[in-house]
Image (cartoon, rainbow, N blue to C red; front, side, top):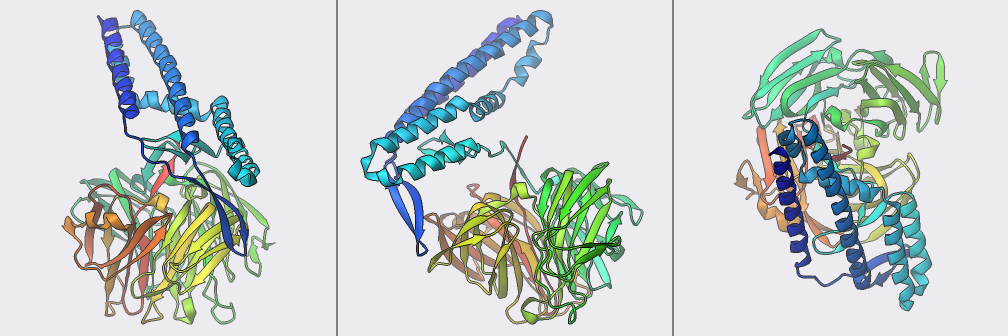
Length: 592
């Protein structure tokens, strides 16, 4: 009886898969778009050749369908054989069938495609043959063929079948997707010039539950409830700040029984900034420090570039490769300069902190196991204004993005920096002109008091915003800009005002970056957005995007796009003397 059920279930599965395949075959074809292949630049203007991909697409689709059919048949045969053998030896047919899902079968097939050398060779041959047959593009044939061969050798790209057309996708892209919502968090707070006030954690969730907060350096180990209808805040002593060079035990640990988002804010005197905490699933082993240029040490002795590392494993070996704009760092009677290497070992809950009178941007951190990294400036002086704290939790190198829309924040003067992990070429566009720039490894390009920009990088990069108010010099903050690859379709986030000094006026804003056609589907706190503080548009890859600013009240907020169109979101607020800003969340790819 169990054997019969096994065969019956697999027959239904096969019928469903075949039905899906037949349905795809009957979809109407759309008119093929030409393939744009960039050539060399002449005086900054790229030459582009247009290639009709119709014949190429037909051959590729035919090959993919044949290949997938064969792989599907072989995979199903193996599944059936395994079920039969298991059924003959034990009465566990129900459990076996339950665990055989379409998702598992698809993952096996995708894995086979990814590692199939013959498959890549077939794709390569089809494209190269098409190029040979088209005499009108003889000039670019060798360039295109070399590009394809190089990318296939590195395992970077593959041609995959979509519902309507054949497009180039990343074969190295992970199959799992997660967000900055999680259950386990490790974080820290960097030293600030201000000493009077408090640090805060803010926790939001879409369901009720409880969280544990553990801070070994203060002896705090407590459990508290979290409600879906309000922001949970927790006040922390500034003694928790990483404030001495070297190893300390100053990690902040949060563990919840429900998925939550965690935000950290520093309110020490007028020194204020905030950051989005990343869950441990997002942590990586490789990071690049992103800080900010400082005034001369003689004039501003408290304007230190700094970073902190938080360990989450029993033992982690860490290599720090310094990049500094000047000077040296003294640590344990050893002098470290540009490109020098420092090796340390940390255990769980231990932290490592360093600061310097010169910019540490571009410093590399490589660990034997995942860690968390904070980076910023003890006190910044953006545009020669008064000082304010800057701090962010850095995204691991493996999660960096390529395509960005850099918003002009409302009532703000901002700089932004593009940080390159490796040598990169970036296409920049500001609604009037296209400029290509080259950035060397571990360097950055900075734009001051800019208007709306789009960026397209040849390799993943990190972009940071540095902003203060248009009418005041006091409230500079630092915020990580999400790339288009980081966009989500919904966010739940806090707007907070626990400033030590309640200097008026106080304003709190939301900056939304979304495809223009989708902005009508936005719902803020379940309502349509009717009152914009500002809106602007820019084009990226023939897609029109809108940058929208909305003023918000203090409290818990939620925004979503009704059709699940992803968008980017930055939260920022200020009073007369202080300001903060942070991304509301990220969507990142992770390997299963």
